[in-house]
Length: 209
Ligand code: CO
Image (cartoon, rainbow, N blue to C red; front, side, top):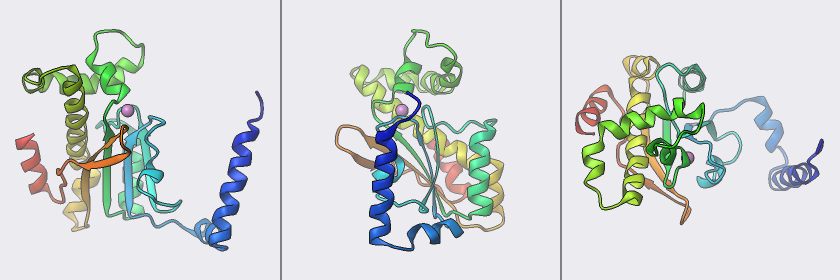
């Protein structure tokens, strides 16, 4: 209970195999990080950010929460974003949702889930705003699929509207925000084609969502 030997053994093997292929891997990384990407994804254990995109430690700055949400007053997420944009000067923010998201599913259901419902309320708001489009879909599975996608698009817009990104664009810093979705069933990413790189593109996406 107090020790988790399997995890420590895994860790020793993992570090050893990385050292075997690149002897100076950890000493180099310990000195500094220069990731190009910020990943904002769901906490779901089936969506491990680095693995999905085949990136090693040092390549991906990561923020994860239930439902991959970017809330205007969430200082945790905003602090990660600010550090990534202002200090690390990352070039890409990737908002990545996933099909079959438990958070999105819970937000669509009338059943109470406790405190997390307050967080999921943000997804429920999207559901209500898009209800006409969602109701037009054939069944519950399709509605869940679509709401997972719409949630990503909404979070891309939220990233774009932060003072952090607005200021970065304002001073001419190159920064793209991407919206992707991951399919648990085949392990593949899909690009939702909602990339925004300027206030103008953000306006267009907001008008056409
Ligand atoms: Co999820």
